Length: 331
Image (cartoon, rainbow, N blue to C red; front, side):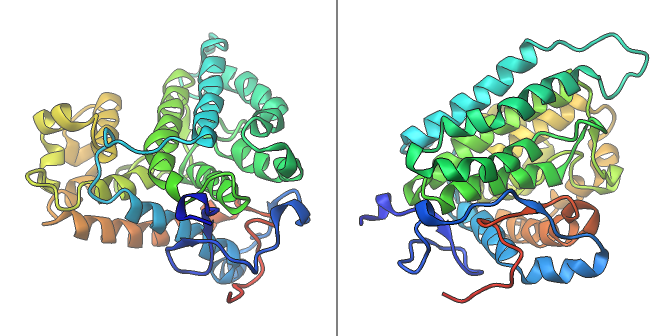
């Protein structure tokens, strides 16, 4: 099996995507509908020791390494599975156009979002089935749960880093069943995740979604975290763009099409008014860090502490056969 043919599987706590002959062939695996397992704060220990945590963080770090020093406009392989995922996201985007906001007294949380979400809830398995080959059809109900969890909450009409994590988990599951492979890793971030971000931003703007569990001015961002991690990795060893430049409007306008981090900054400045240091204090502080590699390392630590180790975020995470709650097993 050549490297390009290997399933992109995250094993153990390392950040390598490998294949393992000891893995159960996905076609014979017993897939299950993922469910919540973290019900109380003491349960967080189970999560941090789980195979799911090890595989999830390994997946994030592998992609972080894969995009290091590369522009969004970098030439990379686009597989059929990647194209199908983009088509899936294009469908979600089209449904937003077909579901305009309704007139309502409240400015935030437009109820038309619930109509949009109901369509996804109904169609999620059909959408995932367009990406997953027929011999892996048994995996579709399990994987589709993560897609449904990745677009916000239809009761509260909010969106946050827990929903973003569900999308990363969705992609991780597709890797574990071999739909996405080692040589898809750049396209996973630059093609699929970037398109996902565009659709989420459109959702947030169209339906005026509330930030879920926002820390306000003291949080990194109201809605996202992963594009800042992967985006800072893209900028490592950049010949002239330094962290101090991302608060410079000219530098952002000239370079945002190449760098995910700067796309995020542009979106923040479009959505918020007033001095950057006031509405995005945490990011303002990061702009003083001397190098992108230090920014990247710091953001990974912050992501673990502020997202993955926070009960209000992880209580909503769902565990199945692909991202199991059981403790890490060594290969």
